Image (cartoon, rainbow, N blue to C red; front, side, top):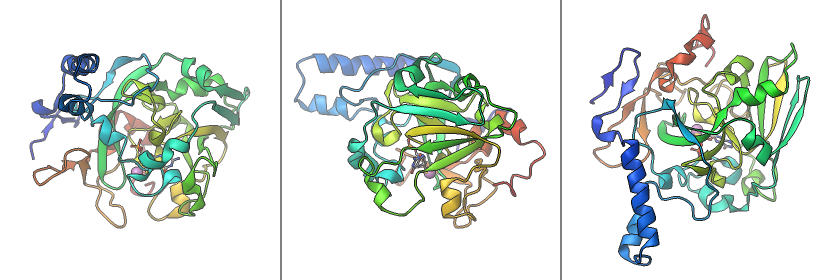
Amino acid sequence: MLIKRSPQGIDLPLPSEITPRAVFESRREFIRTLALGAVAGSGLWEMANREAFAQAPGAQKLSAALNPAYALLEKKTAYKDATTYNNFYEFGTDKADPAQTAGTLRPRPWTVSIEGEVKKPLLLDLDSLQKLAPLEERIYRLRCVEGWSMVIPWVGYSLSHLLKKVEPTSNARYVEFITLEDKKQMPGLRSPVLEWPYVEGLRLDEANHPLALLTVGMYGEVLPNQNGAPVRIVVPWKYGFKSAKSIVKIRFTKDQPRTAWNLAAPNEYGFYSNVNPNVDHPRWSQATERRIGEDGFFARKRKTLMFNGYPEVASLYAGMDLKKFY
Ligand SMILES: Nc1nc2c(c(=O)[nH]1)N[C@H]1C(S)=C(S)[C@@H](COP(=O)(O)O)O[C@H]1N2
Ligand SMILES: [Mo]
């Protein structure tokens, strides 16, 4: 396996997997040109649609400049893969289910309530939420505990911008994220695979780490329903299940919140859930991962990195035994 190590221990991509932004943009331009041209209906048009960056027709565009501090130089996962291989149990447990069933989710109108141990509780509609801080594009790795990963250009801003607005009280030590629970919109709620609503949580200092992203879009557009429309978090140094989707409530608490996966299988999913390749899941290894889109016989497995390749978070856990606090 051809993995180079930089001094910080971050994997450097092979030159062949870097898609320079200019190339990316010109491909986009190429697609647009095709769309405008007389090729609709032809085989060429179909080819363009299958292209990595083809997006959802009619989706609202979001203007967000790439933040170079968070621009992972790895090949982005194809939009098609990122939107058809999903975990969103409210829409079924199969990876293909959310893309097929999440059409019933109504991402507008939407409100998010920020409450609990705060001096100034807030109820925000989507437009206010999107305008609370400048939107940025950030390219993050997201690794699922099941052993696969994706590289996605997310759109949002540091969650800390939102959290400071409500002025947490001195009792606030954790932040809980609560997903919508509506049987009419979410067919998966009829099945008791998890306790609903889906809940996740972070320690307050984790939630305030600049990497933690309040996310409203991906690939330059609003989030597709299956990826957690209209607002989710993305916590790139933790296993994917910490990144709760379709959030309606953010609650500050004194005590460590319960979390959906910990309730379902406490010996398999702890509260912290930092990506740690040295700690196996009880039923499988976490040492390597499969990059979605790199399938087939010659696909190389990638080595999973400590904190999923975000070593800057290590100071949050100084003095903690991360084998115990898994
Ligand atoms: N509400 C909710 N959020 C969720 C989940 C879920 O089932 N319900 N699945 C989690 C898991 S296990 C993963 S890996 C990521 C997947 O995000 P993606 O589909 O956008 O790649 O979402 C997370 N957020
Ligand atoms: Mo996951």
